[in-house]
Length: 239
Image 1 (cartoon, helix red, strand yellow):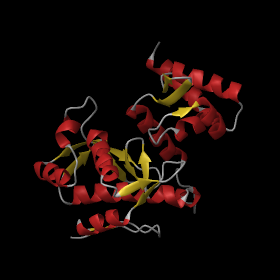
Image 2 (tube, helix red, strand yellow):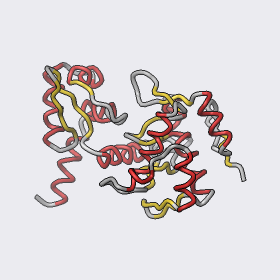
Image 3 (tube, helix red, strand yellow):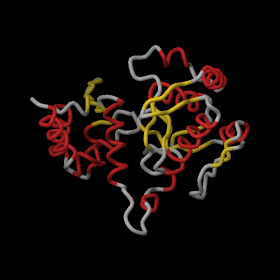
């Protein structure tokens, strides 16, 4: 099968609204049951099962069995990144329209993009790292400088473990609500893990949205990041 045939097959899988809702529901990196995904997709159990079988067959989802339950999750970080990229295209601005107007405020403030931080929080952190020459981003890829690794280690990020993984160590990811980059790859995932472990952010129930805790706001302020948690103003960095 040629690359164009594979692309056409994937496009066909993504072209059905119920399947799209299933995929976006799994962007938080958790696993959900077929029953839960049927509710998310707004379809009956038999229809959801058919959709899930196609998504598993198309290598967009994987299924894991635990006891009597079958859990579904995205097949990889690359699948999540592709979905986020398509969401950016789908939210392309039209005349006198800005996509954030149609986005739930909590999702725009801070959310998980599969396993890394997105929204204004993710973009602000990425801006800070680039501004201080801790991270260098180019052509979708990236590097973490020695000073950057020292800084991230001080935040509780396990840089050695991130570097030893199979996925790309550092890369940029275009944020579909902010239209700027946040940090992805293994180091982006490790940064999100550190923020969650230190309770600087917490997951909101039933979704990908995050809330920045008082301790997190204090830490961000100490690092020179003026992060607006309410208004959709641009992130400011201290000099």
